[in-house]
Length: 57
Image (cartoon, rainbow, N blue to C red):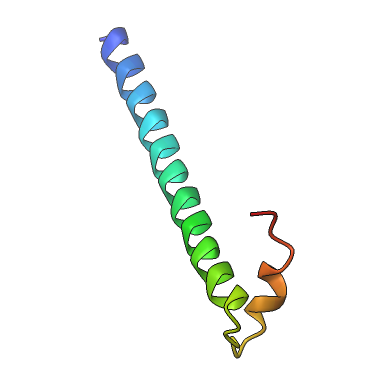
């Protein structure tokens, strides 16, 4: 019984961590694509190119 509760808590934490890592990876890939678009001279209407010019990659 105690082992089952511990296993459930560990699985919930690892699932939450996995989801967080996947979301951060998606955000980084989206910003990278947007940065490439802005570097090619694209004009993004909401000012997002101003944000991407400070990205180190």
